Image (cartoon, rainbow, N blue to C red):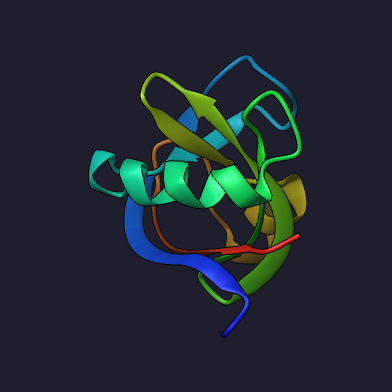
Length: 101
């Protein structure tokens, strides 16, 4: 889409992080960090969080990426976990779109 600052597709493993709920996240692979960081300049709303439209499997959802350990973490909401039948340790196909505010 024309309003996308970044559109990134990857497959990643769901991990646990005792940060903000929902506690399950997919770390964005390191090779996408620079692109996300660049997009975050225009999209971030504070504390480095970046609003995103995301898709895991066939489920679309709105969320925010959290910066952590030289990458970003994509929260996997409980509703997404249930809809896709995924959990801790599963590998998931993911697409993230960062849009202009």
